Image 1 (cartoon, rainbow, N blue to C red):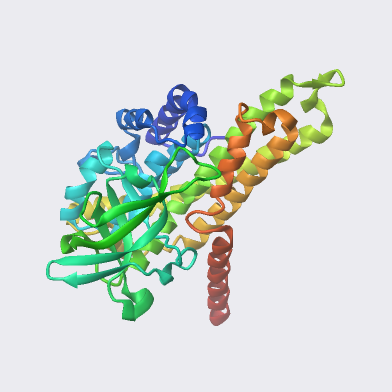
Image 2: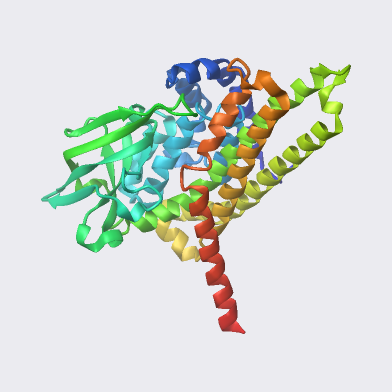
Length: 411
């Protein structure tokens, strides 16, 4: 279906689709089995411009928006959700930076981000702070022109491969959630090391590591925005990034169907292709409809988001201000409820479609030389990272309560 995409979005769609089929697909099984990051694919991403497609041309990007990022993520995940995370997690790590960064910080970090020369990662989760981000224990205490950081982060995607990490810290532990701030910490800073590499169910070709900070001295110039506003920047980041996870989930669902339908057309039982059995055919029809519904939900949301995000970026560059402040000037609505709805619906669809496709194809789909079992393993993470399905439901019902309370006040 045509979702009224513009010329740039169509180019992104074509480029990523071709790249996924020609370069990513031949590597996916090997990288998944080896649980290995692909330097080869990173180079392909750099050459294609995908790493900076959502960043302004002034910094070497392509000038796209949230929709472009979501489309690329869907098309790459349609072939391999693990290898798709190279540009995906770098964008996630950099979105809070880009929203809150000053003009000087943007000029310092964005060119290498856009070119793919430097990768970013998002470091929020801790052993005691998963769904409850306010419980984080990592501290950053001022010492002259530096912050001294101590603590541990875990389940950090792109692990050792990243160069910069947007790290949620508490600069004023006595204030709890109001003491949370964001620091950019560079790999190689003394005291910053890596702990355990996780062994995962899915997305195995993207390495997930523990980060350890022991008296790490970080320049005050690496603080994003103001002290104590980190939670606000984190929430804003997730509003913009969760549609990307939803798009990834749609890609996984579509990829599973891409493997299933041709198999069902050629596999014969009782003298006929099994897709012609009404029970199986009807199930495929339902799965395809839900996948398309998820896609429609994602792109109706991201196109609407871009009507505010892209002007805010343009104004920030023109005025030398932060993107966050320009978004506030536009007085746009928070996207929390809608982003949560997209992620909730699409991640559940991805899991349902992958599960049902394995069932439809039978024993062959349980074998590792047939890609469906990988789609099923990869689908599960979309229900977990960037907020579990339960957290998405909390976000949605909280927003609905506020909406209906406001309506009651107006009556």
